[in-house]
Length: 428
Ligand SMILES: *Cc1c(COP(=O)(O)O)cnc(C)c1O
Image (tube, rainbow, N blue to C red):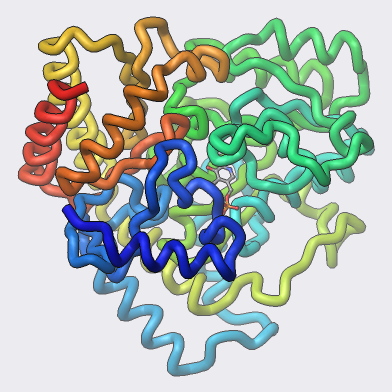
């Protein structure tokens, strides 16, 4: 495969955009080489500027759950665009999507729309702090909640890949209010509450972690966190930016049957356009401006183009909830195919999977938290990534990311992927 045009475009981009990209994980720093520039995408496939075709396993990091350029979404956006693209005034679309989300997701009465997952999580902790009149929050090592200051402390995903676990520019004052616990380790949570009684506003967590590879919660872990929050009158925030509308219509709360006090959304909720949201009970949401004193705003929040893409995507999911079984079955087929090849070649590995989230770590030991996820062999991973790329399979360019399948992917695509996988694994 030729990547000449992409490399040239990357060199040009680097002259004008820091690192040549607008989001760090795109730059291939973890795997080496030059990123692929996309020209277009359709269904399960990406086409790059050199004319190569790839089967896409990142789906824009989750949002493209129905496949690229999905006709009803494209039609909705085009139709709305002709009527004006932004007003800074209320529209009926916003109430419609709010009703749809609230009727789909458990335990929420009201929802506020924003423009990204980062904004959703940043606003959710402000709301939690305002509501509880407490300053501190607990987050888990390796969990990613966007790039706002409070969360850039042992953050997952692109932040680890770049080795800046504590980003310069985050003040000591902000950092001291973020307490770090270990995923799947209740004791590490309890010890913070012992040291800081009545000071912790909220625990924020990815109910199924997806930013240190895919790490499902162990049995009783989330229930345990729920109990600790109740005992200490702290709020539990489920960051469902990744899991919301991906694991099921009701997200992880529904699948795992644990209740969160505040839920954040992003990715799928915008169907490929920039949308985030946070939602909670009437009691908590009434603190938010203009009803209450906790300020939060956005010039483009509830943007009609973005909302129409999200609305069409969620309606499609709601009208065809079997999509979640299909996605899970396809992910399982991929899992089993990969497992066979890895076993045959005696390669040490762990595959974690939950619904349509899956990740492969080249390590013998179980991957259940950030530390264990870091044990994977990165030399293996780099070779694996580039091997698959050369076979026309686009995987996340970092061992800390999970794959996201979309509904356009066929079983022929999966067979093709497993054949490529077999070839690549033999050469590792
Ligand atoms: C992607 C992600 C975010 C950040 O969302 P952006 O839209 O990139 O700002 C937050 N939390 C989780 C769990 C995510 O996966």
